[in-house]
Structure formats: structure tokens, C-alpha cells
Image (tube, rainbow, N blue to C red; front, side):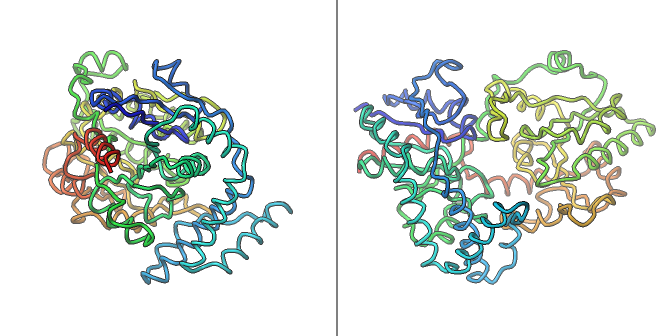
Amino acid sequence: MSKKIFVFFPDGVGLRNFAFTQFKALGEQKGHQIVYWNNTVFSLKEELGYDEVKIENHRINRLTPIYSRIRKHIELNVSQKKFKDDVYPTYKFPFSYTGLKNTLITLYTKLLIGLNSSEKGIVRIRKRINSLERSTEKYQYCKAQLQEHQPDLVFCTTQRATQSISALLAAQDLGIPTVAFVYSWDNVPKAMQVVETDYYFVWSDLMKWEVLKYYPFIQESQVIVTGTPQFEPHYDSRLLQERDVFFAQNNLDTAKKYICYSGDDETTSPLDQYYLEDLAHAVRSLNTKGKNLGIIYRKCPVDTTNRYDAVLEANADIIAVLDPIWKPMGKQWNEILPTKEDLALLYNVCAHSEFVTNVCSSTVFDFVAHEKPCIYFNYEQPQLKKGIRDIGQNYNYVHFRSMPSPEAAVFCTDKKELEYLVSQIIEGKLSNVPEGKKWYEIVAGTTPTQASDNIWKSIDAILKR
């Protein structure tokens, strides 16, 4: 029997997984009516011809961001105490004391954190957030939309957006089943779970274990392992362009072998441009020794800084810039949204590069899916000074403990080693792919090509309950 499923986009991060992959087509093959409940500035109707219900009221309670930060800090405090692990405070962002308003907000926030740093305190703050969001016009607005369209289930494409709270509360108050997809591989230990839903879809057994570990109020039956559609496009050979065609289209030199440099956001890697510069030096040196190498620089899609410009200009003869095909739909970082065309671009960057280099990103898995190695930079730059975040702490985060061994990536711990590591990979003498595949399976699950289908099977099972 056909069911109406609301696929809910509280923000644009889920577009890649649930609008641009085979996800919609598979759901329709199962006979479902799929309606995108759209809180973003991206029009699925205009851009893709999809049936959508636009959420025009975006106003959450003005206190919700403050209480959400309080919740996050308390959860991290509880994890630190409960698991006797000092990694959790490193997930916190510093408070602001700039101006009277920010100072007062900080003092109020720290007071409530101090009064509620316990599991019972987490419950109190969560109830407070829900109460705040139920009091909003947006809650009533979303509730009216649900009453008008009568979906059988609401599938929320990310668990981490405060914009989703009122809409999901409205669905639950109307007795509509709700599901949240845990969006990213590092989100659970970082206290990024903003919503409470009836069910949670996760990438792997590891992620299920994490959800149950960090959120004891969630029952095992509520957490369902589906995999993630994030990597499915890498197995769609229809996206592959012939090497000559791809190189001509992107002004690449067919005589060169290219290394992909995958840029990071400014928070994760504030001195990222200097790692690109180090790679350029290594490539330039190897080219004097008979190699013919180039670099494809693919920036972080939401990085709008100009910090790489000097390096790119100085090395224009060996660095080709292939920007992600994302569209700025507003002025905020979360309004820079992916496009379907970028899936094909990323596929071909992976297919036609020898390997990838970056600081701690999940592109290691994109390239492992193509049987390609990854170098992780793990040394500090001489430009590091007080007030600039070091990159080393990234590798201490909980999600890096999922590595089956240190060989799951090629770690460059000294810039003097970089040229040697690059040459070893180019010559086929060094690769992390065998161990990287094991890591990929631990993180993303055992069926990376079947995630969308697994999600629909799980939705069907929920609807039958």
C-alpha cells in the first residue's frame, strides 16, 4: 500500500545523500509518494522537479541556540566524567566575551551548564528546548502543514540541526512516526544530536554502539543500521568520464599524474594552505628527478577564505584548481549547497588522481572506494602560534579510534618525509588501501552500495509496526 513519506531537509547537508542519489527513485519503486519537506533556500521543485512542501517560517526560539549549546557542553562534561577521557572538552568551542551582550550570554550559559552537568540535567535542558520550540509560531506552522498533507512518516535527513526541532515535535505530537539519519561519521561522540525521534538510522554497527553509549535514553530497537548513501555515487560507473575527456574539460595535462589535495575548513585546519604549499614543493622536487606530477586542488566547499591564493598563484604551473560545484544560496556557510553535478566531479577527481592528501577528512573513504591511497598530514606548521588551533588534536578525536591500525592511512608526521612518501605511493611501493578498506567497513558498514535500499526497507518495516 502506497504511503506518503515526508523527506525533511532542515538544512542543505542532506541534499547530496537524499536528493541527488538513487534514494528517491528507489522509494518510488516501492510505491511510496515522496514529498520533500523543505526548510532550505534550495528549491527542489524548480531545480529538480520534485514534489515539495516549502517551510517558509524559519524562526526558531531565540533562546534555542543558547540552550542547545548548554546541552552540548553538558553532554561533553558528562562523557568526560563518565568515560574518564579528556578528549571531550576538545570538542567545545570557546566562549565569546566580545561586547556586553556576548558577555552576558556567556555568563548565563556557563551558569546553567554548572547547574545541570549531570544526566538528569541533560534531561532538564532537553525538555526546556522542546518547550521553547513548542512555543514558537514555526511549531504551529509546521503542525498545520502536517495536518494538511497527512504524511505517514517524517524522515529527517540530519540529526544535528536546531531548525528541525519544532517540525519533528509537531509530527510527534500528531502521532506521525519520525526518523532521524545520523549525518556524519564523527557526529555522535561530539554531542551533535539535537533531535529526539522515534528511530535513528546509522551508518554501521560502530555508530549504533556509539548512539547507545552516549544516549542511554534511546533503546536498542530504535537504532537501525542502514549504511549511508554518501558513498553510493562512487560505485556508479555511469559517472566516469574518459581520462582524455575529463582532462580536456578541466585543462589538465594528460602527460601528468595528478595528486588530489582536498582542502579543509578553516576551523579544522587553519593553516591548511601551508600543507598545500608543502605538497607543491615535494612535487616540484620530484619533477626535477624525472617525475611528471601535478596537483588537483579541490577546496572545502564551504571555505570562502582567500588563504590559498598566494600558494595557488606561486604554483600555477603545477596546481590545477577544480572547485566543487556547489551553489551559494545565501550569505551563511550553511547556505552554500551541493549540486548533483558535483557528485560526478568528485567521482572523476578520485578516478583520475593517483591518491589524495589532506588533514583528517573523510575523503580517505571516497578514495579508498576507488582503490586509491591517502596521505594525512600530521605535523604542525612553523606559522602555528598562540591563538591558532593545532591540527594534531584532530587525530585524537574519538572517531579516529575506529582505525583498525595506524596503516589505515599514510600519516606524514614530518614535512621532510613528504617527498619520500609521495614517491613511494607513485611508484606503487606504499599504500593504505588494504587497511583503509577495513576502516571504511568499520565506519560506513558492510553494504556501501545498498544504503538507500536499506533505508527504504527500514522505513517499510517501521510503517508496518
